[in-house]
Amino acid sequence: MKMLPSSSSQKSKHEQSKAAWKASYQLTNLLVNLLLGSLGIYYELLSNSHTDHSILNKIIGYSEIRYFAIIQIGYQLWALPIGILFVGEQTSMIIHHVAVIAVAKISSVPLSVMNAFKNNPEWIKKYPGVYSKYFWASKIVSAMIKGGPKKKEKKV
Image (tube, rainbow, N blue to C red; front, side, top):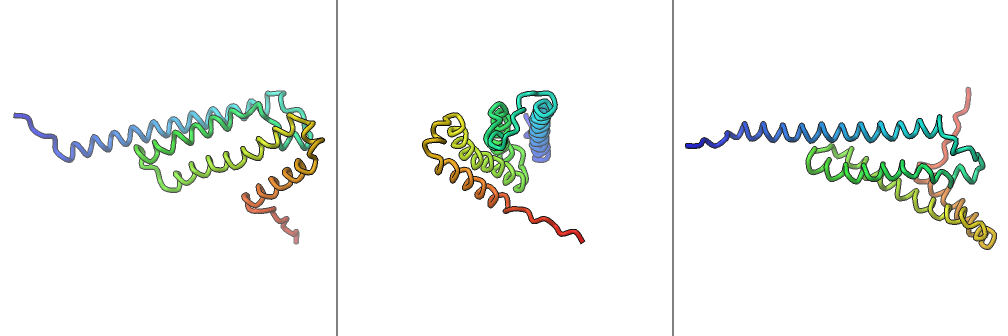
């Protein structure tokens, strides 16, 4: 006669499974952040690909680092369902993952339009008002999303 496992052993297996999911989730997070950090250090210190310091290129350049966004969005899209369904992630972290995706999407649309203009200089000549108004509108909206301009503190 087989004995049914006790509810405490079932609970223990469930807790072990949840602990294993959480450990693999945290290890994946570590690896993704280690990769992004290493790429950032490489790009900033060792790469010669960002030598154009014009204001236009500071705003809409850097297409060669699109992998940062691709890796980050991919990780966030993976972390959301895993965090909710298997790890029991805290609500604040779920909000964090959603916010990272939202910010990436919000900033990618204006950047795409600016890159389209940058890649087609004849558009800038043909529609200079559209280009400059779009540039400043996206700067203002971006500042509003970030909380507006920062006030300088007066020195006493």
